[in-house]
Length: 321
Image (cartoon, rainbow, N blue to C red; front, side, top):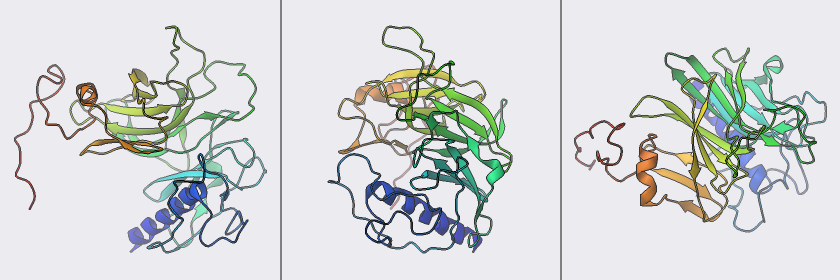
């Protein structure tokens, strides 16, 4: 039963976050910003125009428990929460740029008792000043020669009106945390990302990143993170994070010309990249390149697609009835 309640609580958190971006909460009054103190949402905070959004609903979601987040800056909580991910008995809520872009990062919530969740304030994962964490955070269990434990990964975007950085590697990219002990997280790397520029040189700051998704390659066992790059037309960056303390950029040439990439989801059965106008399936010419990195497509695997890296394809199985 605890698992059932935990899932329901996390679903409730996800609904709170998503509807904050799309429209007013159905349970909120007109002009209301929070259903309870510390909820951390703002009605009017959304991407783009009001047209084309799904109506706010709460069907099939039961409120099991609620918890307040504490803004270390003391500036309040309106708009504070941007995304949620979870592992075991803990949920991790990214701290957005609202109400003021100060002391952002991720809050740690103990959900072992879903009816009475609470924040572990001492475990707050703070990112570098003038950055904030938004959408696309993730937890990932990783076991290899470099690391054995649980990772939490979030992206970094730059605060509006932020001054020019005074030190290198203090903006953009992703932060990777060791949350094997969720109440005592350890920062493994900060601002890992794409430092290349169009002239072929290297910048001092990584490009700011809208979201991130990590997975382990089913072919070679290596682990990768794909970043949605806010600053380039080739707006998908792929990093090898097999050694999470030393990520390596392996591809920053993937381009989606239809629209600015706004979110990203990878599935074993296919690769789907969400765009404002819908879902875009990568062109066939991209399949071999992505296949070499373990991004699965519906096209059957053949040896000519990646002869040096891919294993022989498994025998085809009969389709499910």
